[in-house]
Amino acid sequence: DAKTTQPPSMDCAEGRAANLPCNHSTISGNEYVYWYRQIHSQGPQYIIHGLKNNETNEMASLIITEDRKSSTLILPHATLRDTAVYYCIVRVERWFSFGAGTTVTVRA
Amino acid sequence: GAVVSQHPSRVICKSGTSVKIECRSLDFQATTMFWYRQFPKQSLMLMATSNEGSKATYEQGVEKDKFLINHASLTLSTLTVTSAHPEDSSFYICSAVEPGLAGVGQYFGPGTRLTVT
Image (cartoon, rainbow over all chains, first blue to last red; front, side, top):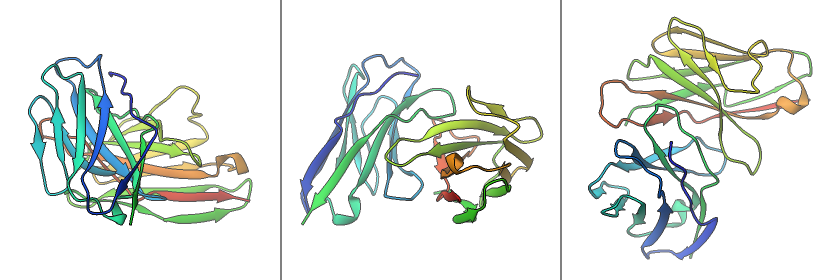
């Protein structure tokens, strides 16, 4: 599975959009990009995933660059409940390799 | 989305005893489940892959005789920590794969906090 690189932490203001970057320069053609988040002392929560096209659901949007070497998760209107560790995972096999993720703190 | 449950959510046991953790897929059948472990301020680490009707596959460094995994049905996998020691205290999380969907990810349980005294 391709390795991902995420910033260790970021702050954002409540009500504003949060843009979380992820680099995956060694991604191969059949590997999906997944985003999960983990709120303190809970199991990871699925957010969104994509292969080539940009994706949007009720939680977030996923923007994947044309060369697929990086992606951005967008939380359109961050709330205090969005404070969590966000994991970007690239994989083709069924199990996940978790990196350190990005600790996102939403401030009032 | 699909729901995965774990029981118990928290358990405290004495050193030397065994503890069983259950992982259930509530609204789908999962031929494969995964067990992860997470120590404080660290990320999740895969321990083993649980396959329905066959032996589990353990990651390097995980003792199969200490962490017994049973996947007896398509909706239930159990992890038994045998002869638990304080260093086994951790957050144990299971996940399940819903088959038949392209690019499907994993659905995670809420986790079980194990404290060994």
